[in-house]
Image 1: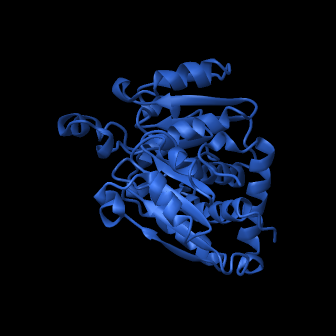
Image 2 (image 1 turned 120 degrees about the vertical axis):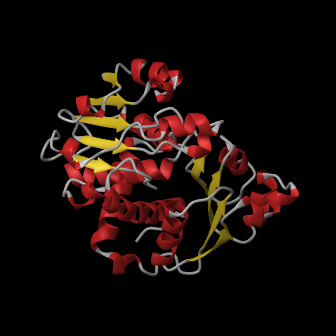
Image 3 (image 1 turned 180 degrees about the horizontal axis):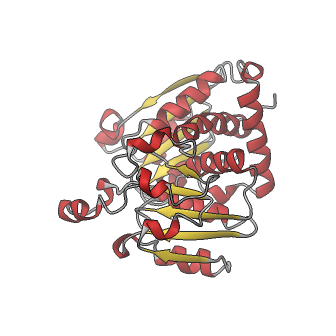
Length: 305
């Protein structure tokens, strides 16, 4: 039995196979419509989510399976003080596979150690968000035709953004990938990412504070919101939240074949006028998230179609 707790839990070869299945699902959805008939997915979301939770539910339903679970800690026995280990041992009696989101870093790992069903980390604090990373990799590969020889711009909250941390960890395994890190000094990537991931692997990168400076050179621009829930006080959040807003004017500086991604939800960091630009791919990214989660469920349940 395998779990997905970190994007690095799969080799590059396994990721390629997973993305190939996801692409086949996109092209031949009817082929997979009954592949999880009789199987149940438990969605254990201890903090709010729209896209990730509904994407998992849509994925399982598309595969012919069913879904059970909760969408906040208040509606679970966590409100009574139950540990995640006990919750998972209980849920293992009801479901065949589980997707867990938790505000504490490492909670899905702790839960997986006592679980008798595969556990998927659907986000743990500011740490990792591996299925968003799988979504991002599939989207980039589908749009650009490759995952190597790319310049990736990451913009916004690079300190607390778990999607950014996961994506960097995944992309450094591909050849000739370069990063442009765009953020205010207060929201730069953590030192451990800079030192242990980028510098340790000799990955070329530069850090800039102006979005305009990066626009002409990036192949993918990954925008992120400044997350209120990761700040310790409201004043700091208000000061930082409007630092970077992608507008139509800024898009004129970009390459014709550059694409914009965003893990969503968007607040105001991408102007709605950008939505009509053919390079705006964030809603296509949402759809790719369903395909890759379908492929992941099949892999962890060891179902071949």
